[in-house]
Image (tube, rainbow, N blue to C red; front, side, top):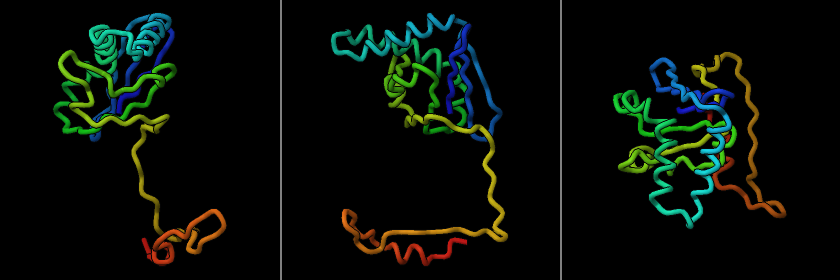
Length: 158
């Protein structure tokens, strides 16, 4: 997971790799300069920009977000990068990040999430666990019956 945070004096990037401690790196630039670069990157999606200009801008973003973490990513076996984007970074498709040779999406699957919790997942205690299940097994006006609902609701998952 790559979690960039735009701060007044820098871009802080937190990287979470399964089984490893959180890592971070920073890009020391004023927020206005970061925002200006992001705006140029957004504008470069317009076909009027040349591919050379576009790739140069997206290589810069790759260098900010991914390049410092590349050694850890390469040694981890990670196949998917999940981005949790801050501020105006949410307006950019991460699939266009380019390392100078290839697009990031050619090396990794890319996922984007509006937010995520960086804490270890825990299982629920199954003692006295009660659940309510519901499903539409019969057609209703405007809704078709869902297949296998009755069977799915009878299955004991615990």
